[in-house]
Image 1 (cartoon, rainbow, N blue to C red):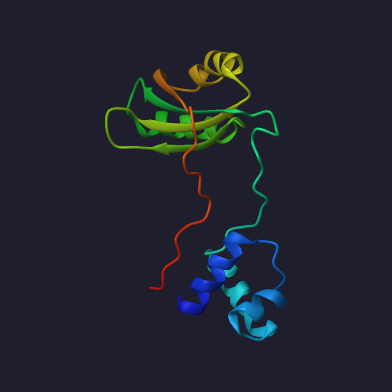
Image 2: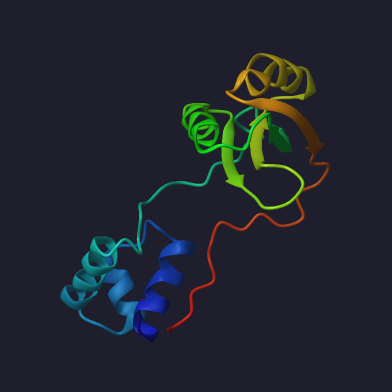
Length: 153
């Protein structure tokens, strides 16, 4: 990745709807050269897709929670079953296997605390292998940045 690719990626993360012509102008390249760079970055997996960022509050998803999840067994089979089930659970935005005092950290968006209580009892605790959870409700989102820092190298 060179400096032009890094600049291209930074611009796209801020404005995914920018036209190739406008992007080319900002990069000081031809539209053809810019299009080729976009194709290359997509082909090699650097660009994984495009999408709109939505306001969760306008969608009725005002409660953000992080949940520590501990499984009853630490085996590859249990990890795989849990991961498969999480991938089909729409309320779960992110799920990360972590090192430390628990197995997974889950990030979820729910309408409110009553809906979270239902989600916890009916969905989260019924996932394969879940032994216990610890929930942290977000009181204020201080920084929620979707863009990744892009560096040459």
